[in-house]
Amino acid sequence: MTSTTQPATRPGDVWSSLVGQRPVISALRTAAGGHGMSQAFLFTGPPGSGRSNAAIAFAAALQCESDAGPGCGVCHSCHTVLAGSHADVSVIRTERLSIGVDEVRDLVRRSALAPVGRRWQILIVEDADRLTEQACNALLKAIEEPTDRTVWMLCAPTVDDVLPTIRSRCRLVTLSTPSTADVASFLVRTLGVGEAKASYAARASQGHIGRARALATDEATLNRRRDVVSMPVTLTSLGSAMTAATNLHEVAKEEAEAITAELDVREKSDLDTTYGVVDRGRRPREYNPALSALEKGQKTRAKRRVLDVIDRGLMDLVSVYRDALVIATGAGTDLVNEELRRDLDRLVRVTTPEENLQRITAIFTAREQMLEFNVPPALALESMMVALRLPEGTRP
Image 1 (cartoon, rainbow, N blue to C red):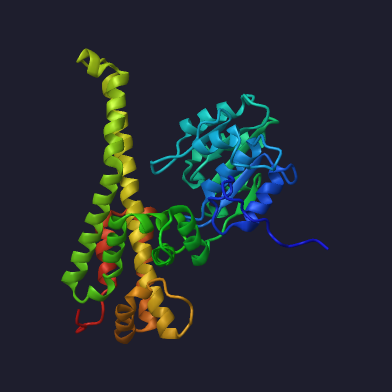
Image 2: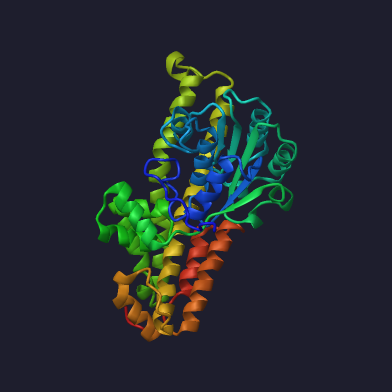
């Protein structure tokens, strides 16, 4: 009789960062051991589930030198893959809105090279859903005709985010949203935070590991989330709705700037050093085009950061209306925002489940307008907040 028990993750091995993904770990370990191996993999799963972490852990397991089993986490190859310095593992990630054909062509050229070591040449594409049409075409040919020792790993939220011609040539690896208990346990184990804080961060993050880590360790992130989830009961007039939209947009811009400002300065300094601006005190002819390209890329990155921060805020708002629906319908499932019980009870008293479903729809509409149709965030947020208003006469 075959046992159905999944292998446990050993502390310190390459799989230890994958939270609540035992079936995935089991499948990838088996593949790394030579059973069910493919030369192209597609990692899918919701935001925060650990798609890129799974790909990098698998890459480390494929390069692992230990006889104890693939992915020991101790050998030189495991260390260098996890550190991002392994000669035969290339990762393409972008801070921009898309991944262009030039970046993919460079990766394709590398894929044709023989590995430096004895094992595999591995190419990992994070956010494969951001590939432009030209980039997809360049990638497709390389995946169709890989060299014998080349492995491609693509990461995307769903299979529908990748062209059918590409995904049909990949082995699918599907990650799931980890449970609240798994996330809380991970935070206690890796960060040493208290169980109460870990439990709150796990619930509030809704299974997003990076978000949970930030909520557990960064007071500013915690306070920003509290400000956002307190908004629904304050939306009692047109003025309060417009103010809330402005506040959410401004906070997102401030957080995004805090994330990117230091990197922008460092990139500018590196560019000046490369072209000798600092040493010689003058700008060569090639400097201005390079500076213009850098500034354009930084603006694109800043725009994406703002949208990412706003998107997190929108999902936090959705969690409040979801909790109100849980209470109103007596569903009996755990609340994301248990600490907001008084606000939630008030929402249930002055609204109906149907109205709160419409509010959730309004949030997702605003999200689509910004992410898909390039509507200015300020306008999309104003329209959304007006749609979230409580009934006339409701007191704050």
